[in-house]
Image 1: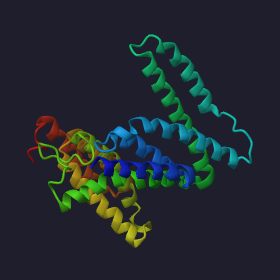
Image 2: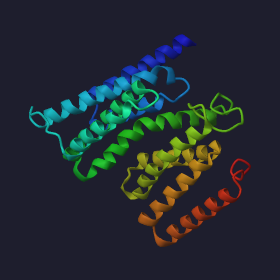
Image 3: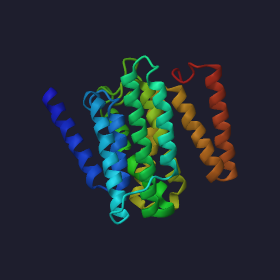
Length: 275
C-alpha cells in the first residue's frame, strides 16, 4: 500500500542518513552510492530523485568535517586535484549560458563538482586510515549496499518467480524498470566479487561461502536479464582478471570463452535471448 511504501522509504532514508553521519567512511560512501542507485528503481525512485542531491550535499559536509578532525582542527588545504577541479568548473561555467536548459546544466555541473570533491577528500581519508588496504575497504563499503539491491530481488525470484521482478517479456528486471539496467548493475558488481574469489584462501569460511553463492546467483540473474552489453562487459572483466591473477590454463580458457561469446553475439544479436 502507499502507506507501507512511505514508511519503508522513510526508514531507508533515515538509515542512510545515520550511516553517512556515524558509520566508517567506506560505508558512508556506500550509502551515497545507494542513494543514486535508488533514484532509478521503481519503488524508491520518486523519493530519491531529489533526495540523492541532499545526500550528496551531506556527504560534502561529512567528508570535510572528518578531514578537519583528522588534521587536528586545521582547515584542509586544496590539493592539486581540487585546483584542477576549480579550473574545470570555471571553464565549464562559460558553456552554461549556451545550453538549451541553463539552470539544469548549472545544477548538474555543481553536482559533478561536489562528487569530485567528495571523491578527492574521501580518497585522502581512506588512504591515511587504511593505507594499501584502502581500495579493498572501499569496495566492501560499496558492495554492502549494492548487493542488497540486486540479491534481494534475486532471492524473491527464486522463491516466487512471478512476484514482480520479471518484465513483461520474462526477463529479470529486479527493482529497476528495464532488464538492461539490471544487467548493467550486475555487470558492475560481479567483477568485484570475482576479485574476492581470486583471494579465496584469505577469506574466512562463512564469508567465502557467502561470496561464492552471491557470485553464482548474480551470474544467473545476469543471464536471466538477457542484456547482451552487460554480459559482454562481465565476460571482458572476467578475462582481464584471469589474465592478471589466474594461472595460464585458466586464463587461456576464460579468454577463449570471452572471444567465442563476443563473436557469437556480434554475429547473432538474438543468440542470448533465445539461448
